[in-house]
Length: 611
Image: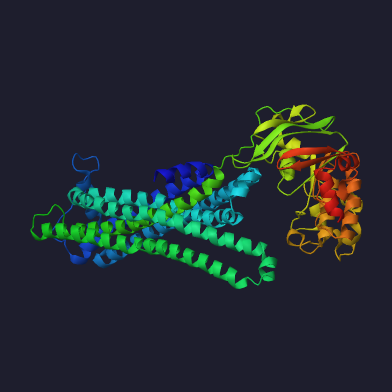
């Protein structure tokens, strides 16, 4: 329960007013419930004519003596007065109507206490989802190379949903039932402390037995949620790779893999559900054992004529005691649900408490633009702490110049440009803009200076307008159209029936590769960044599309400082400097003609592409 209360402190604070109302309404419900039980004793006395020989006198409430005896005496006095005035039958009707009225108020308070908890439950779950999404947005790219997207999706959907179903739904029971149990036990003590003492001695063993089963449930819930993550990851991979799956006629193989994941999830869920379904019958059986024990003990005393409680009061006592069983069952149900939800919350916390190694300093320096140069000084970097991807790389990119990076796949080109916007942080060396280290400026200011055009144009399931205007606040239609014209995208956009309001599909699936790339370029043009990163922007295009995209890129690169990664050397022949990377080091640098004259690695690359 310690973990549960820590969780409540984290997420329930904004909803204290709902919690306060729930507690108040549940207290009122318990009070009216107890009052309704007190009516049963006079009703039973009338029915069984057990008080005909007794004469009751009204005792002042401030009389010295046992308050319990005064209360019982005065209750019977008022009932006997009603019987004398109205007769037993009409008195019985009045008492029955009073019981119904008390029950109406009790159930009204019960409903209100449940209704007032709904905004708290839904609010906590909404807050957790927003926190997870916000955390995902803030985590560095390195985190997602170690985690499966399907697993993250499972934690945001299945695990957060389980927190709602298991923990927040149990919160209502955890407020209501302890209050009811407390009031019932106070009533039982008031009626007979001896019987209640006997009852309390029997309870701890039952609580221990239910707690043991609940602890095992948490371990099984961990396993079930892990299997759910595997299933979601399998689905995400399938949707992303449908083209390859169909091309290699691997549908049956993927179905078999998914069936295996689903069966494992089913088996793990079965274990959890079976143990969870044990809560109700176990609490029902243990509650019946408690009733039987008290019935035997109290009944034996009454039958022996040596009882400290009379028969009508004993019947009422047993009714109240039986009423305790239902809150105890609900309490035990919450005890089963909460470990299941805590297991899911632990998985969610792996995201919420994930360390963000890209840290912004407390008082960052202002960064208003690029005025002189970008400088990479003796950069070394690795992803896993073992093999270095970059080793002692130094590079200067003057303002307005274009520097190209070429080399084999895996030589560190993309890693080098990813270090500039701080998608990762270098382990050794320093990157500076105008002499200021990028670690000393605001990350938002740094990334605001940089525009990206990648090999895989990343677009969103939205309209042309919203994709081009992405990241630019309050962009006008005129600005978007101008950017599209510069990117050679305006003509094919206007061929669509709804023009700029046309939805382009998931990741731009309704467009060709060249069209997606030109939308990506138009987005960078509208942002108008002083620094431009081109990561193999034309390598996946046909000749005609490449020509159109290259024209758009040349317009984009004018007056901008550009770092371009290229496999096709023809696209970077006019760069101010070309750096050749090999196994994480710059092995050659210079202009196109200078590098050819060296007859080294660059010349070999050029000759292979010429062939």
